[in-house]
Image (cartoon, one colour):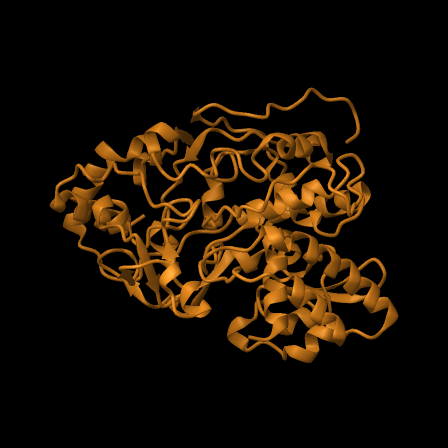
Length: 467
């Protein structure tokens, strides 16, 4: 794999997460239970789409002169409408823009993490479940410098490369398909002054030893219903201000951050227009109707109801009740102590705040069929396995082809393995194995479907296809 292919992937982690007057301190922790709605700024969806795919909100990247030596124009099926200039020929997940110094650079946009192909079709808003963050990108960043000779471009390359080297130890996942964006935010906070946002080589907050907590990227269309962002309901207040934390990679001042923030309400407004894809296969309507009744009786308290009686409770379920892997909820990375305080006391905390809860939000299930794998860490490949915990594989792998879909089980067609990553013959084989014995990768919990009869469980699965 060419070195430059790895470099855009790491920049994408920054975008997965996307004042000055006296104010009362925000809370830094929230209880389990319902999450209340809070006011959001209005925006223009059309302008938001344009900003999403054309603007340089990351602030730095690989000089275009180097990028173009490795990559040619994207094929038509990888392009997006409504893009300007060079971006018209860029793949959907990459954006070229001019920095403040006038150098054209290329970086991933939000769609690197928040778009995915599904059965041959690109779906904007679907989490990327096939990205590879298993390698240290620091060396690749350094090697890319050999392609940059112009002095001004080299300054921009150096700024970007320095950040890559700094963050790389904290963003290496054990397996392909999971995302380390939560860790990345903490590293960037730790190297920025909370008042000025100025970058510092020295840690302003002491970082713990690198422990990468995997997350599965949630679907954007669920933001229409959610009152808080992230699995722990940590993202409260103004969602657009939280989304634009993509700028913490290379935006160097509060003034620059305000410029990015000025158009992120538009980006949020665009996200609010996204709808989930419809189930593309046949549905047994009689069985689905039976499943609806079982779902309403068994699942709706946490996940809400759909159709004519649609309602979503925005409910945080405590770890003791949900029972899923608690590594994220126990206070790692950005969702702990000083990292929460940094955000809440910085420019970002003027309108938004982090207040993680000791549990996980039960998500809306609109388009759930498309969002495999399941649980917050992507540890369960199908809904059938999610609803019958004894069938979940301890070690598993899948093809990585999003057309390799199991219509009956609803999720990826997978292969259960007898041994985990330690038994792999090659690195390529190892990173393709999901090993639930690793820290943060456990597939335990959410056993609410175990008490259903086989017939009721199958009916619920059929009903979920219709959402």
